[in-house]
Amino acid sequence: MSRVWIASVKETVSSEDSPESSFDSVLDALTAGMVEGQEADFSMFCRRYSPALHRYCLKIVKGDEAASYELHQQTLIRIARYPKQISDETSLWRWMSRVVRTTQIDIHRKQKRYGAAMKAYWEHIVTQPRNPKLSDSSLSATLMEVLAEMPESDRELIEKKYLGGWSYQALAEHLGISEKAVESRLTRARIKLREKALVSLKSGKTDETL
Image 1 (cartoon, one colour):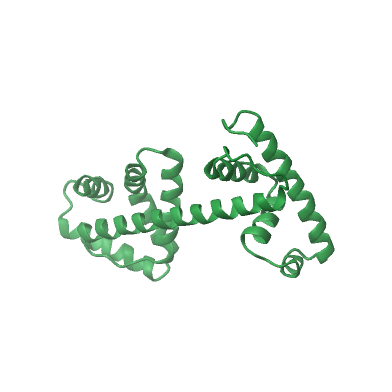
Image 2 (cartoon, one colour):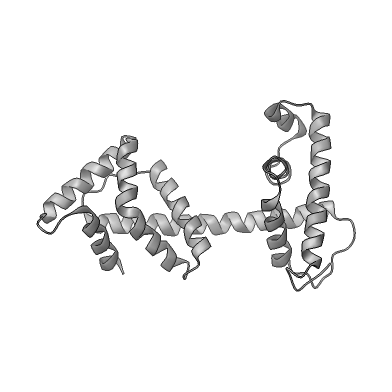
């Protein structure tokens, strides 16, 4: 797989009559510029290597388009934040594959923490006992889906307060409003989330109900 990936990258960088050393020198200069924070070099890096990187991400997540998009984007963000000067294509492949796999692990960890936090939040806003047939994964997936569909202002408030642990005072300072206003907005946002989640769970989006 690595040879195929490297070959596809090389095709985008060098012409048929370009010597191997020329390809390596271009790569070295490009990654050196990225280390120095040159945005133009990072843009060039993305144009040249992003297609091959995306194909590798797609393979890692077994063909899941949505997951490959997330992995691809997060990998590029990590490369931009922590670039490394590399002078040969073999080292480039090894480094890129490590970045992809490290990013994938981080995404999985965040998803697990987020799911656990959403479950705890659900127990906080719903007073009646939950149907034991409703799995944690179904509940977390439904809550994340509903939360993603909510207005950005409501979503940000809920995530910062209940998933990020922000205090009312911190939220008030961040939003430029009073703590009472924050409390009122949170109450309305909780009601919206609870109602939408209940409708979603009972409407057939999941096989389990409350």
